Amino acid sequence: MALSTDFGPATALSCRECGTRYDLGPNFACIECFGPLEVAYEFGSVSRADIESGPTNIWRYRSLLPVPADVAAKPNLQPGWTKLIKADNLAGELGLRALHVKDDSGNPTHSFKDRVVAIAVEAARNFGFHTLSCSSTGNLAGAVGAAAARAGLESCVFVPANLEAAKITMASVYGGRLVGIDGTYDEVNRFCSELIGDTLGEKWGFVNVNLRPYYAEGSKTLAYEIAEQLGWRLPDQIVIPVASGSQLTKVDKGFQELIKLGLVEPKEYRIFAAQAAGCAPVSTAFKAGHEVIQPVRPDTIAKSLAIGNPADGPYVLDIARRTGGAVEDVTDPEIVDAIRLLARTEGVFAETAGGVVVGVLRKLVENGVIDPDGETVVLNTGDGLKTLDAVAAQARPAAVIRPSLDAFRTAFAN
Amino acid sequence: MSVSVRIPTILRSYTGGVAEVTGEGGTLREVLQKLDADFPGIGGRILDESGKIRRFVNVYVEEEDVRFSGGLDTSTPDGAKISVIPAVAGG
Image (cartoon, rainbow over all chains, first blue to last red):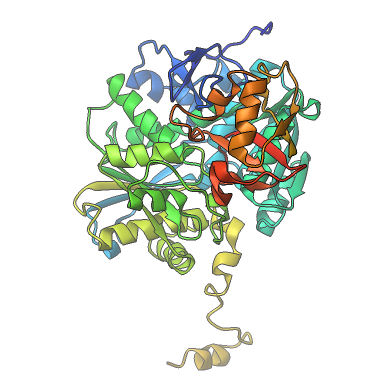
């Protein structure tokens, strides 16, 4: 590549399956074995003080990410440093000693996707791409549209046409093109893979396809923030939602890096993965003891997790097994219950994916799988305002009355 | 039984840069065998040492992921369109 690129501490792409190394480029699959490529680094010395003196967004961890040192000065959405909420009410209700909710609905476009897209934008700039694109279940499309607008790039995003109305509106408002495709997310994804090989998609950065190795690294910042916000300590247990499996895989990578760099004490933590029963290929494989994922056709209200053929599913299985965790799933009614439980106990209105996580947490507690005495973190990756329909039937006015005290007295006589 | 096979970018070094080639065979297994005969080495990129589809490769016959439809035994009628695509993630 003739461009002069600056990826900070990143030095190469490396195949996660067979270890073959490649120069840093817009590539995502290994030529030898089709395995996914990952960013490899040579970290300098990184101290807690360096990080703590950085900005209150993901760029405080820039020395651990494939981005140039001056990344914070460029126009971007500055995502991250979201709240880690000490969830004592929910902990009490579930019988847990110590529980935290990492609430990523506080990001600029109200989902964790702003983290990953911010890294992909830097890669797109490095490679001289003019258009930012993605296949998306909704949250990512919004994050790409907004980030492209801020960065001064074109955008064109692809989603299943039947998404929640709020996600379609939100992803369209930023001025780029949104294209609805008659099909499932997996079909949208396949379409994008073919578009990349075509001249139509030339100079396009598909954040989750040809920029995926860079993009995926953004999820490590969830791990860094959780550890720093706990006082530079890893939790005992963490519950993470699984769509493609990329986020869970990278949270594990982030924890491991913190240990290797001496930023936290070494510790054995357990990682639990959460899926919706209507799209649970990884949970099914885990329970059956399989190493290969059989794809499914998704049918769940948790549309942001509705990936029937999860590319990083095999790694989720590896990590859950290695850390002594598990993969569990909950039904749509359990998801709705869990959204309301979190809202009622902690004042956090999660989207359906957050309901999946809290529902799975409750199930793991009830089944005795999670240690109630361990310090536990759960992720809420998105905002309930984007999936209002999920709870609209249950979350209703207590009464509609005339504006008089008598009417109020009558309505609540009991 | 003539079929068309769409080749992903990273395998086009085997096909001289061609994105779509003509294949032959009544099942996906036969099509891939013929493909490897025409473009030596390409089969080993799609199938692992034990002859199974590699875990990060998706193969579609028409619009159907073959993991739904019988894997390598999926029938490939005359004129069928086959796509080989690396697995990708997202959300």
